[in-house]
Image (cartoon, rainbow, N blue to C red):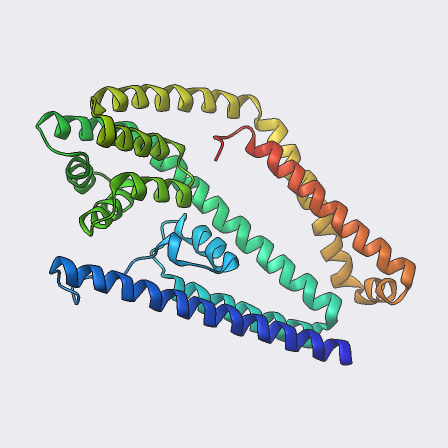
Length: 307
């Protein structure tokens, strides 16, 4: 009983720590942006503070924010911190109702499925952005040819682009207008959304700013590289479709079987957990299953575009 109370207390403290760290980081960012707006003579009321990777100190909160932002959500860090706090409280309730083993397992399953769903949505959005990127870069080249700067070309092209690439580059244009260097904004966006091509654009912008040169030639080469890589990726996915489906089945069947046994006979796992050897076997089996899923996931990711 004392162990349960200590565990609940530790979870509550962790949730409060996440909340306070997130609130402090959000306030720090708001103050910094408002000071910049005052120096530029901008309208503070008209500006909606957006998220920024460099202002989030807590690594758990930063990871959760990145995962959510990759799906296209514009949720700020403060809201994400509230969601994490609610999840922590739900985990405490699950442990109190289902016991230590059942509560931890239920929490782990919910987190795993939530992570998988968000990752899937982010991958679909990233693939759509990559598909739209060549047409967007062609529009940027046309605006550059008219004598505009790169940030002006990006903003003008983004306004005429479809979802989901439109809000991505509109955000880049807004941050540049607030005074951030375009190469830094592109690099940060590339890190958050795992888009390697934006890193190339950031490097090209940095070189162009420092040494000069033709951005249009670099962007044309990038367009050709994106289209060639997309063609190769489609062929690879077609060739490995059966293997990827087998990997998915191997990952789901053990988890589904365990959940079925637990639903039919909960005492089966409770008795094993009460025994010393059974506890070791359960922990070992769960660890091996998680390791196997991770290895299969990495193998499946190797058939897609590297992050």
